[in-house]
Image 1 (tube, rainbow, N blue to C red):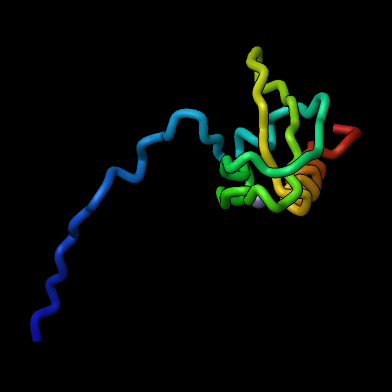
Image 2: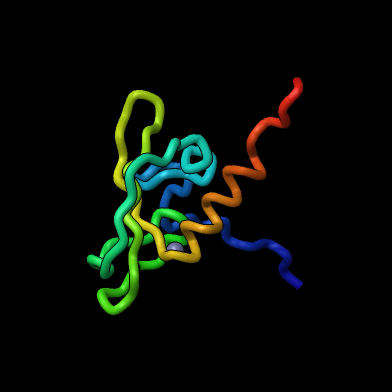
Length: 94
Ligand SMILES: [Zn+2]
């Protein structure tokens, strides 16, 4: 039996992709104005799945630090994002 396995890496996994936010960064984003409409073929910022042109997409203007971002979500992902932000909020009274 040969127990050795190749440890090949096809691509560096630690590299941040420009324009894609981590879940942690998304949680820190403060939502502002939002719009709903048909998908425009860009990936959802929450689940990374492209919002089809036949699907509803929410566009959220959000502030992250000093930057303004435009986020794209499926409706269900928008709900999940909002829920994750609320769950992550520090408990009051500390
Ligand atoms: Zn999504």
